[in-house]
Length: 324
Ligand code: SAM
Ligand code: SF4
Image (cartoon, rainbow, N blue to C red; front, side):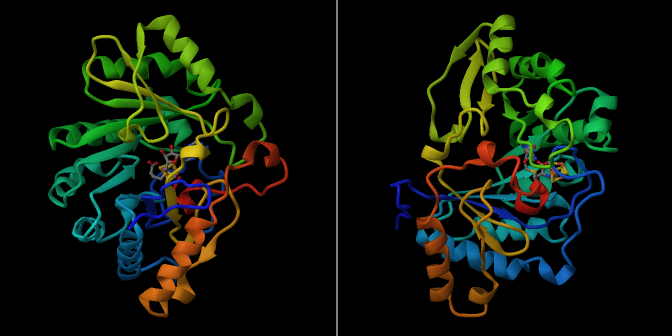
């Protein structure tokens, strides 16, 4: 079956946030005081997440990304990933992680059937990393990255670029793709937390690209389904690729194929919209009810987000609660 929304977009990608908890406190993701954690029983059990994934797969979902909060902090995540991988119709299960726990878990991920991971890494400088993550240890993240590579996981690095915070490292990050077969992706900062200085920190994908062009011989690659929302490039004759993701300046809503489930059990068809459907009442009923609920969310997906226009009006939120 194929899941097609009312604008003829094929919805085949599910992002499952399995926890709102995290071992970091990135300044672009949550406010300094943190966010009130869901109570234990407010987070969906693995059993319910698996049920949602199975019903979604019957509707046409092919790829599932597990995210959070930090997904690797949730107990039992490896077994959960293994079970997701066994769902008929699901061709790929991937994970987004900050990498802090990868040192011990990379091999287990591989063993559970995960082939590719996205790792968030916003600085290669100890102090900047500590400041962005409010206390994180860069060396731990780098050790995790190394372990992931040794385990044979394919790696995409995600850097959220913020002016005056880490933008001076854009070239260093791009250079990682010269010797490693990694996909290094630059993400426009989305001002969801709304710290006082946010406007001055936003830096557009166009500016990032222009700086990269000034420093490297970039070739533009054709978009494939593997690129996701990233516009792909390569530094000529190198191993890796570079991607630029522009949710703010040039949104990719027209080709968005995603459905999201938050850790608290809400289904969302757009990251940046406030609309969400509580799946709990449907989880108490049979699969048909759950199926209709998911179908309803997917088919009513809005044409595009209006986040930038509404940015001063809508409430700040934490990506950790939704899954990024
Ligand atoms: N903890 C995991 C991690 O950091 O990779 C997974 C969850 S995190 C919320 C998922 C993604 O959202 C990360 O790649 C992160 O960089 C991105 N993200 C969070 N807040 C963001 C923001 N304000 N602007 C752009 N990307 C953001
Ligand atoms: Fe945690 Fe990921 Fe948010 Fe950073 S971006 S605080 S690692 S959930």
